[in-house]
Image (tube, rainbow, N blue to C red; front, side, top):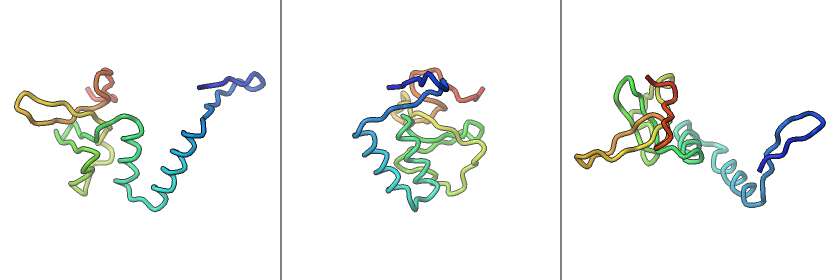
Amino acid sequence: MHCALPHDRKVVKLVDEKELETLDALKAELKNATIPAICTAWLKANGYDGLCDPEMACGCSVLDLMPCATPRLNACVPAHKELQDDGDWLMFPGKAGTGENLGVQ
């Protein structure tokens, strides 16, 4: 839920106890986390299935994020997975069913 404050017109998100517990757990989990762990947590929290690099036609799932160990940090974008006719899963930019393409043409 959001609340607009009349004196300065800032929007403040109010959180309930359950959300606070989740945020506290996430902070504790990420305190000494690696870059892949931080990215995995963010991707999961924001409804993505992994990353993809559209220029290189590669992708990885949050279950095994950055197996290449050398991701192209300026090219990898949040992605969703789609089952293909051959039974394989492929990663595509953006969230499933939203038409979001994250600036990828």
